[in-house]
Image 1 (spheres, rainbow, N blue to C red):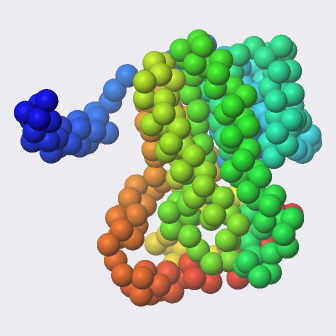
Image 2: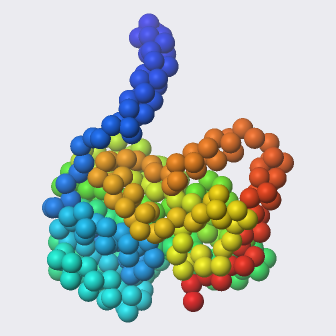
Image 3: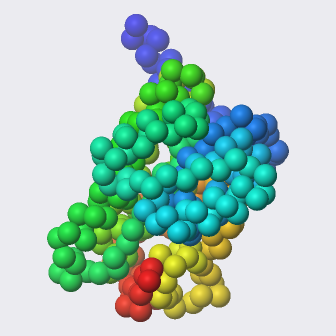
Length: 302
């Protein structure tokens, strides 16, 4: 037994090198992509912003059915009608993911009226854009309930059937702020860090579950009304992402069975720098780039 463990220990660095090289080659070479023509996709927060573009992109790339969840019926209805006109079956349901009982109830309605969900996209999120001392308690709780706990309830509602079918995918639209927080958005950064830990744990937990996978997307600032008013010092060097680009890259990552997607790819460098640079250097980077004060002009969704 000791001899076997010693051999495993010696082979471990070679295994890691092999996986790194294989992953690098796979990212450069076109591979097989998941066929979406049999997939039923449910998107939380699907009425506007990134969620709306995700719904359109899944439909464009061949999803069989698209289901929208959200709290604003007007937005949901408009998005559903637009997707239906494109030729893809689309349904919408009013659902607040922060409400556990409502999630379970609507999940049952979805199964009865539309069918089994095979791709769950946890996209719903809110941000209040205030410091800790300026935030009221209810707003702080709301961020945690929607951005973090909502994923627990939706995943618990739909994952069991995916495991039973041995077919499914759980997607999380996270944020690079989960790994590089900024002042003025303490509720959002905290909830997204919790959300990332949830997805990392879930991804590892599903390794032995055939046919079921996860994708976590960590985009930079995206140009949607949710972060309206946010400003960085050098917008030409650090331009906000377009929501349609985030949607396209997300669907591509799901089809490629990619576990984690950083947008843009330069966010990898930020994460690496943070792992070894002293705190004082990181503070200077924040001040130089303007992220230290970028939420001072924040307006948010009107």
